[in-house]
Length: 113
Length: 118
Image 1 (cartoon, rainbow over the protein chains, first blue to last red):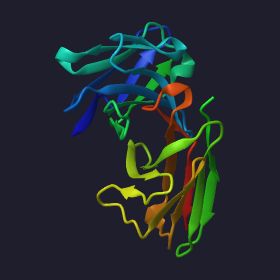
Image 2 (cartoon, rainbow over the protein chains, first blue to last red):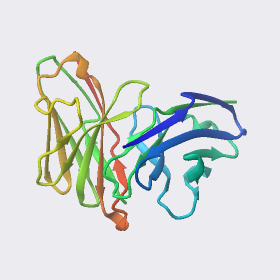
Image 3 (cartoon, each protein chain N blue to C red):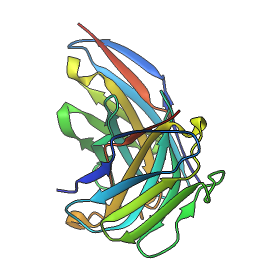
Image 4 (cartoon, each protein chain N blue to C red):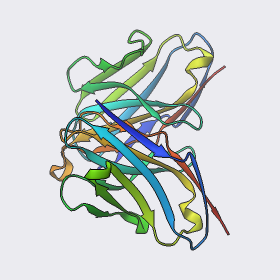
């Protein structure tokens, strides 16, 4: 069984400040981990993924995440927030086969000017 | 590459009617397609998994007779909401998994379909 917990349903950051979105997972098999972004009334866009290679993963739009097995975490960061980063972010986990994605509850990011 | 489309993007229907939503993989063959449902301000919930040429596998609590899924080809899956009721109003998102670039584990998401039942 797999599950994902995203700490904080809403995060507010100032433009130019660090963005940190927290994700913890549980999985009975080696996990594949994903971060997706969703803009209003749109589908999901993949930001980055961890697939058992490098633990520090760089994605699109300046985002990166670090897989920490000891902490069962996969937190997403971006050094400097931009207004266009305002969106909903979802962390997800699957097994290596990719059969089933389990999503966290999502974190809505608000960027203040 | 790895583009997934959905049609329609929005649909309004009357209670009691049926609605069909199409999900297409445009530039790769999707051996597996997934259907998700998303309520306002909530996360995605997997409804069913369909493999080309096989019956769909539904998640617990999803009525298979109400949400009919057909995956007749490697590029097309359809979700039909039968006898729709207002509580079926939701955002439906499909995803497709194939092996574009050899990445068999990755799902590619469609843009979603907003269903409103009046």
